[in-house]
Amino acid sequence: MSAPIVDDDVARWRSDTPGCLKRHHLNNAGAALPPRLVTDAVQAHLALEAEIGGYEAAAATRAPIDAAYRALAALIRAQSRNIAVASSATAAYAQALASFDFARDDVILTTSADYLSNRLMFEALAARSGVRVVEAAELPAGGVDPASVRALIASERPRLVALTWIPTFSGMVQRAADVGAECAAAGVPYLIDACQAVGQVDVDVNELRCDFMAATARKFLRGPRGIGFLYVSDAALARGAHPLLVDMRGANWPAPGRYDLYDGARRFEQWEQPIALVLGMAAAARYAMDAGVARTAARAHMLAGDARARLGAIPGIRALDRGEQLSAIATFECAGIEAAALVRALRERGVNVSAQGRDENLVALQRVGAQSLLRVSPHYYTDASDLGAAEDALRQSVAPG
Ligand SMILES: Cc1ncc(COP(=O)(O)O)c(C=O)c1O
Picture 1 (cartoon, rainbow, N blue to C red):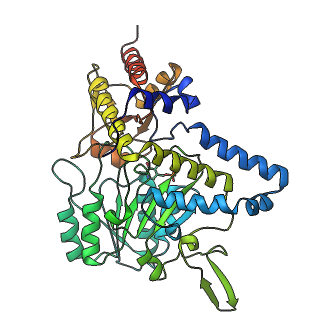
Picture 2: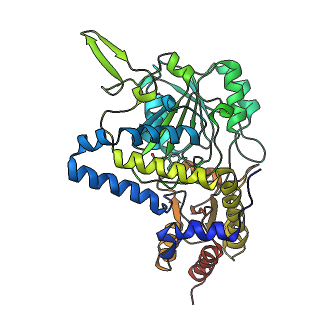
């Protein structure tokens, strides 16, 4: 049992987070406010690089770099050998996809809640290689129906099952472990986009039974921008999985006509690494584990529930989220006002939220039945003053004067 969160915990988390003094930050699904020790880790390494040279700084930091992989692995209950650093969740996801030699009529089985860039990659594979993209059905309450995944695995024999665990512009949490059980039973590779999940919910790759899992540092994990990671299972590594365009971080060249892969997920990395950001991401992983992800998840979800109730009660605002289990992302539509305009209005009042419009992702917005969508994403360090400020600012913005 994890210890209950008390006011002192929240006060400490906020005093560790300088941005809390400046902003009511409800855009953790975009990029969270980092705790001070994350920015300290990044800045210290950049300073060392400037003082002694970039390669020399990396050599002097070997042990902390190894420890960084161990911290990321511990966060998701894996081993260091399963972790590949990538520049973003998208880059990690692309590396995983690039390990499949897709041929015409190969099926990628996915859901209706893909992150836009993931779906664009599938569209590009369909256009180039003739891959077919099949969507599993939804549960009546929203979110993928694992029974539909089972049936489609049997009828379509997919090369890959892909799932966005916590979608970007919807408050639901998909049943990632149940889908994993179906994939494991049928021996189908399984790729999870855990970009909004890592740092928000407790992640155990052994329960998820995935072959690949992509994540980013800057969102609920509270790490720096420009860095993320890919988990690759031992089974996938043993099968020789590696990206189509492997580089010298992933393999050596013993003779013309041959390349020998290195052990471990490093074969999914590229040689050049922003070491400062890797160290910052690891500091964020340690901070999340110290805070206790299971307990901080409960608080973030409770605060998102408050946001749905309070903001959804403002005349003209409609809370959109549906699903069996809801995440720390709360979404709203505002009658007659573009969400992007509300984002600007709230920002002027010191409140950070985000928006998505039909021009960016028409299909997704048609599916939720909204013209545009306002996203409010608290985290465990959010407090009542943040939600109160958001409520006041939104009331004034929808009914000025
Ligand atoms: C669900 C999901 N997947 C992937 C991404 C992409 O992450 P990154 O920008 O680190 O590539 C995002 C970003 O918002 C996301 O919400």
